[in-house]
Picture 1 (cartoon, rainbow, N blue to C red):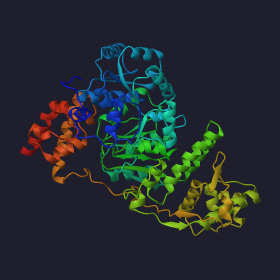
Picture 2 (tube, helix red, strand yellow; picture 1 turned 135 degrees about the vertical axis):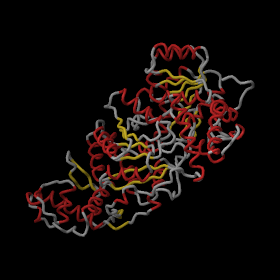
Picture 3 (cartoon, rainbow, N blue to C red; picture 1 turned 90 degrees about the vertical axis):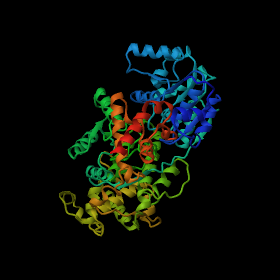
Amino acid sequence: METSSAPTAIDILQRVFGYDSFRGDQAAIVDRVVAGGDAVVLMPTGGGKSLCYQVPALLREGTAIVVSPLIALMQDQVDALLAVGVRAAFLNSSQDAAERERVERAYLDGALDLLYVAPERLSSEQTKRFLGNGHISLFAIDEAHCVAQWGHDFRPDYLALSELADRWPDVPRIALTATATEATHREITTRLRMENAEHFVASFDRPNIQYRIVNKNEPRKQLLEFIRAEGAGQVGIIYALSRKTVEKTAEFLQANGVNALPYHAGLDAGLRQRTQARFLREDNVVIVATIAFGMGIDKPDVRFVAHIDLPKSIEGYYQETGRAGRDGEPSVAWLAYGLADVVQQRRMIDESPGDMAHRRRLSAHLDAMLALCETVECRRVNLLTYFGQPSQPCGNCDVCLTPPQVWDGTVPAQKLMSTIVRLQRERNQSFGAGQIIDILRGKTTPRTTQWGHETLATWGIGQDLSEQQWRGVVRQLLARGLLLTTGEYGTLALSQTSPEVLSGGRTVPMRSEPERSKSRGGGGARRAAHPELDPRDAGLFEALRAWRAAEATEQGVPAYIVFGDATLRQVAAERPTELSGLDGVTGIGEKKLEKYGAGLIGVVTGYEGE
C-alpha cells in the first residue's frame, strides 16, 4: 500500500481500519513485530489478534505470510482486507491453475501486503522455495495452539513450522491463539522455536458472554426453548459429539421453525462449503455441528453457542464458546449436561488409543470440565482460574444470577456406595446407575425381580429422593472421582477415595437438582433484540441492516465485511446527514468511507424523510 509519507501504526489503524486507538497490548505487539522481533500472543477471540499482524504487514517492506488452518475461511479473511484497501490474496487447493499463477505472480512482483497459506502447503519444500524468491516481511502463525500435540485441535503440519526459524532467521514471526493453558503456551514456544520471543498474554475474560449450564433432561426440547427465549432469527452454533446427533438435532429444529443446518465431516465437501457460506453470509442461520466446524470463524454476530453434549476439555469449550459475541455484544454460551455424558466420556477415555500417560491427560481435562459444570461458585472465576487468571465473581453467569442451593449429600452417597459394595460382595454383580437407583428407591421392575434385589439390605432405603435427584447424586460423585464407571455398559464401582465417604471421614456437599419444568429449559431471561440501542433508533438500525444485506449480496461477501452491527448501531444513534458526520465512526476507514459513505447517508436521510 503506497502512501505519500512514512505512516505510523496509529495512522494505519485509523486510516485503513477505522479505529481510533489500539486496545490492550495491541500497540506493544505491533511495535515489537515492526521492529523485527518475534512475539507469542495469547488473546481471546474477538480481542483483535488479526490487527497485531495486519498493521505490521502494512508497515514492513515485503509480503506478510499468514498461516491459517482453514482453507474455507481464507476467502472471507481476504475479502475483509480487500474491502479496506489492503492488497491481500491466498493460495490454496480451491483455486484453479490460472488463479494460483496470478497470485504467485503478484507475490513475486511485490504487489501483495498479505498472503494467506495453509500449514499443509507451507510444509512442502516447493512452497518454501517459491516463497524464497519473494520478499517476506513477517510470518504470522494463526491458531498456534494447533501445534500442541495433545491439544484439542492438533494439526501435524504445524510442527513443520519450526523450520521457518532456520530458513528465514531474520524474518520476524508472530504466533497467535485464543486459548492456551500455561502448558500449551510452553509447548507453542518450544515447538515453534520461539524461545527469544516476547510474550503477550491478554485477559481471557469475555465479559459479554453469559455462561449457562443446565441439567440435561430432554436436550432437544431444552435447546428449542433456549433458542426461542433468545429471540427469533438469532445466529447461533450448536455443538454435538456425533454425526447422528447433529443430523437428528437439525431435523428437530427445522421441524420446529428454526433455520438449522447440519455440518459434519461425513457430508459431501461441496455441501459443507455451501453450508458454511450460508452461515457466513445470512443473518438467521443456526449451524448444528461436530467440532469440525468453526475454527477461525470470523462472523462477529453469533449470538449464542450451545453444547448438547459435554465437551472433552475446557480448552475446547472455551475455543468453541468464544465464537459467540466477537462484536462485543451480549451473547450466551449454553450447555446441557447430564449423567450419561459423564459415563460416555469416561468410557471413551478408557477405550482411547495411547499410553496410560495420555489417558491420564484426557482424564485431567475431563475432570476440569466436570468441575466447571458442578461448581457452586462463579462459572467465570472457575474458567479463568483454569487459564491461570485470578478474577472476581462476574454477576453475569447462571451461578451468580441464580445461586444454586447446596445440601449435604454424604448419607445418600453412603447409601449408594453400600449398595454397590453389597451387590459385588454378596452377589458378584455390577450394574449401572439405573438399576442401583431402582434398588435404593424400592422400585419393583422385571430386572429387580429377576435378580432378587428386593432382598438386599439397602432395598428401598432411598425413597426420600426422587429418581432425578438420585441421578444427580451419581453424576456428582462421578464428577468428583468418588465413583467410577467400568466396562462397556458403564457399571458403577467404588474409587480409591470412596472409603473416605463410607467411613464418614469425608462429607459430600452437593448441588440441588432443580425440578423439571419448562421455565428451566432456556436457563435465562430473554434479551432485548438490540442491546444498548435506543428504541427510537431500532427502525433506522434495521433499515441500515437491510441496506447492508443488499450491498453484501451484490458483492457476494458476508454482510459483516461491509460493516459490523456495532458500526451500524453507532450510525443509527448519531444519524449523520453529511459525510463529515461519519468521521470517527468505528469501523469506517478511508476506503469504506469512499465506497459506502454516500449509501449510509442516503439511508439515514431517507429514513428521516419518512
